[in-house]
Length: 136
Image (cartoon, rainbow, N blue to C red; front, side):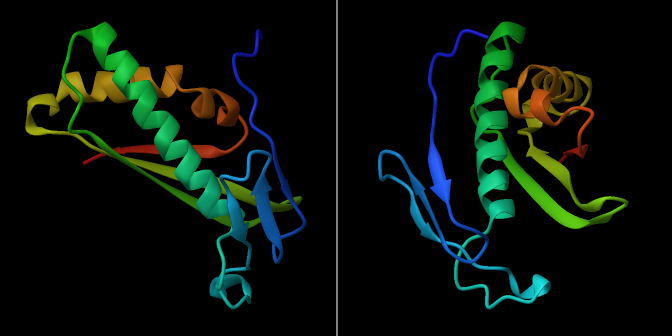
């Protein structure tokens, strides 16, 4: 891969801080109450959800242009879950894509599936974690 951009961030655990190299991100980290924490900070699952949703929405704009459809009113929500698996902990994602009426049906389904094939986050997770696509 020929890198076009590289982001860097440093964290010191689930109950510390996460800081990007340019200082744009400087967040307190905390375990969510469901995992025994106080919830007074963000967590890796929220950060992953935000990044994946943003990447998927951006990828959808590119795919929509290729398909010659209008996807400007699309909203993407990534729900990232953490749970125990056979080797410790694992992640799962439900990607909820809210499409406008003009993209309902077969065209919308093809757009979402093509986006899932194109999105860099989807490529990175493929075969590693379960990703369920839900069209709303």
